[in-house]
Every structure is written in C-alpha cells, then in structure tokens.
Picture: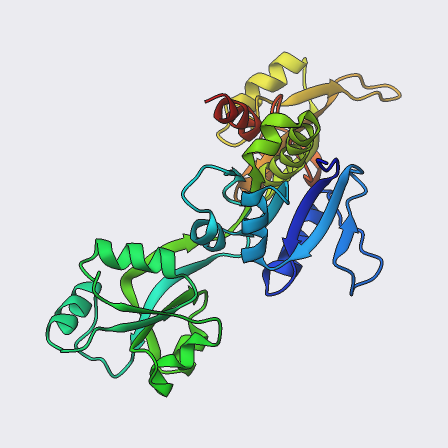
Length: 332
C-alpha cells in the first residue's frame, strides 16, 4: 500500500546537523523535536511534513529510492550516491552552509608532487599502483581517470582517512577539506589543482514523488518560498527616513538621482500626518548591508532625517524562481 505521509530527512550527525537546524529556523521552518534522542520531528509551519534524522549518505539513497521525499545533504554525498538515473532533483543548490571541498591530499614529504600532473609522473616512475584512501570512490575514480590516473588502487574507507598515509595502508587521500587544519595536523597538504568537487548543503527531492503526488509538489513550493525569501533577504536592511518635500514625485526624483537610493524597484513614499506642517513624507527602501552607510549619507544630503534601519527577514517575489524552474524540469 503506498504511503501517504510526506518525509523530509535532515542530517543526524556532523556539522551539517546543527547548521541545517539553524538554517531552517532562520527560514521560518523551525524543527520541533521534543526529545533530542528521537529521530523524528515536525515542522509547525508545514504541518503535513514529517521530519526524520539520518546520515547524509542515507538521506541521498532514501530520496533516490523514494522512501524519502525531501532531504538536506552535502552536494558531495548527493553526487557520490545519486546513481546513474534522474530520480533525484536538486531543488536548491546553494543553501549557503556546509561549504567544503572534496580534494586530493598528499604527504608533506612528497616534495616532488605539487600538482596532479606530478602524481601522474610519480605513478609512472614506481612499480606499484598509487593507493588512494577515500569515502568517495565514485567521484574520486572519475576524477582520477579524467586526469590520467585510471590505474590507481582505491581504498574505500569509513574510518579516519588522515592517518592512512602514516599507517601505511594508502599513499594519499581524497577527503573533504574545509579549513585544512586536520590535514596539517597529520602532515598532509591538499593539491591546489586537486579539487574533485566544491560542496555545500543542498535541498533534494524525489522526482517521482513530485510528479505523482500533488501534495508533495505543494510542499516543495512552500519550502522553496521560505528558503528563497530568506536567502534573498540575507544582508538586506529596510531603511526609513522622514523627508520634507513638495510632493512624492519631487522626492522620488531627488532620490533616484542618487546611486544608492533606488531600493528594489524604487522608493516607497507616503505622507506623514502632522499637527500643522503637511510637507513631510516618509520614505523607505531596501538596501544591502555594504551600501548602508552610503545610503544614509545620501538620504541626509537630500534632506532625510530620523533614519531608522531594521534587518529584513524575508523578501518574497511573485513566484519563487526555483519553483518555476522545477515545474519546467518535471515537464521535460
């Protein structure tokens, strides 16, 4: 019997777990988990959604196989485990957290290996195949083959990779790198041109669920609405100011003559009700953080006063662009 619930999986371990929860909370999609030891939760803003906590790799497999409808995982896990089909759709490819790179790293003592080409040379000069320890055999194999290293021995490992060259069961590693501190602590260094994949957290969904279950597609739109509105608003401020002028049109003309006072589509101007003087207007615009001080300076220069600044939580468009793109993808 087909299931009727809608499932959304989040990482249960690693730094993606707290970062995913913090991100969704900032989007207005707070996760309600009364017992921290439970592996199930809810999203009060989306009552139809059931939340499960799993390992990122299992999330990708679950979405691919259809036991999960949505999930957040690193792009590295998605590309490693998505398979050859098109069962997985990436709804949002840049959630803005969990950034890292899957990269090749060699022992610091390998003075003759500074690039991937040097690895090819080293392989040709030794009788044994190079041994590469990794948790990403599919991505690593493809990358190495593309760079002339198809005849290497991949060692699939779920343990701590950084110790592999020291212990001696691998010559180099292909692993996730964020700050590089762990590599340096273990006398390894990443190759500058050895980046296999740049990764961050992504939102994924099962294609069949989106195509065959209208309620799942409706939830996809709701998730994208909140996420895109939050990301669009990040680093933006709503600026209010009082300004004396003859008319809204005259004030708008003065504002639009300045480089930083146009806002999203233009300034909003409305009359201020006073006891006696009717020549005051309230203006408000949305500006980016890096343009905040030039904006305040320009407002003052044309008569603005009483400037109030507040962060913007959401900026909703008429239609989430990624939802429109999703509909086109599902039709193709």
